[in-house]
Image 1: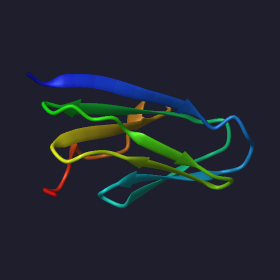
Image 2: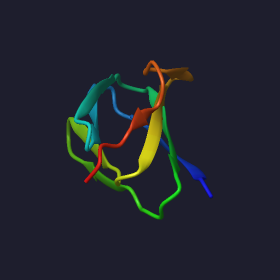
Image 3: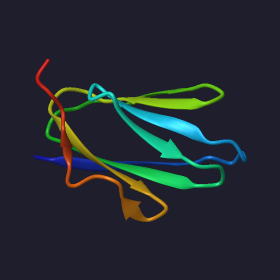
Image 4: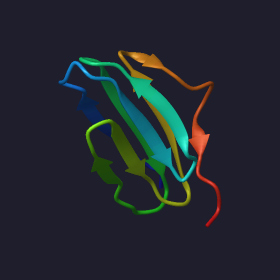
Length: 86
């Protein structure tokens, strides 16, 4: 049975940050004061790992899931990203 959940974050600073979604190494620019949502779908259990530093947010997902990235209410992808096999 597929599970779905979301991660919602906001860049509360005036500085831009890069969002990197692993294991795809996809990179997106999150401008100051913007918000984003990552919608994750998977039929396998897993927990995302989020790493934040001054100019970058990295989100590590697990094999078998798909995700969509929404910035300020708009999808920044042409569809769901499917995780590569391990």
